[in-house]
Length: 302
Image 1 (tube, rainbow, N blue to C red):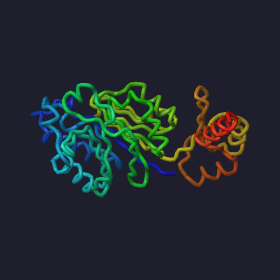
Image 2: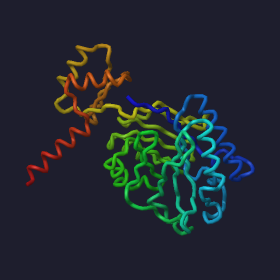
Image 3: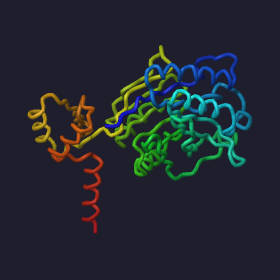
Image 4: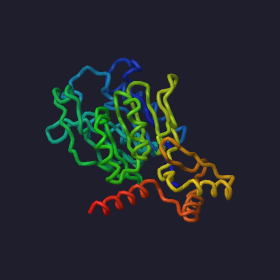
């Protein structure tokens, strides 16, 4: 059972860092990342344009290329602390400006980047170019992830496309919190979602849609242990199996989500235990179950 300890860190937008400049914002952010290292955090997601969010400059002036101090500072921090970092910024590239998340691995190397597909009208008026519409799935430390940025929250098809393209979790870098939208996506997609925002509302959802971490007014970040391969099952045809598991293995807990028609194990972290249970009781992951049902539906339409 793969697991990451992941943190979502707010930006300086509500912190009133003085003077308001890129250098001070970076200094504050690096200090917070160092704090997170003390909690054994492995991956840190930063909020949208975290280093320039409190500046009045137009993107044309605040945007940087990858040789600028925003990316270079995060590369050095990732390498020193051996932490993966999702670094959002306005990026200059190919004579254009994108609202981008650069994904940095634990060695301080750039893995890949995602460009915001849906900039706001104001952003486009200020020169931000929309990214490509094809899903960008990035392999970070052996796990396929997806990214979305702020206004992207309003296009559910792009989130679904990331899942279909193989993403195992989605990182959301934003100015606003997106409210209950993210919990809905986590529940429907069956994917963990990590949200780093500028508005003191950083959150982490697991694959069931449960909020497992929510930023309090007293902290600038949240973190949680996120199960990457958390088994999730549908309740259809499973009630007798659940009874058998509870009878045969009273030491193993189960969480049943009656409203959503799903269930999962509780308190089990050993992948061998998971696999033995799945094999013995012939359990089918919810994604595999729904795929099987759709294949049968498609066959009967012919």
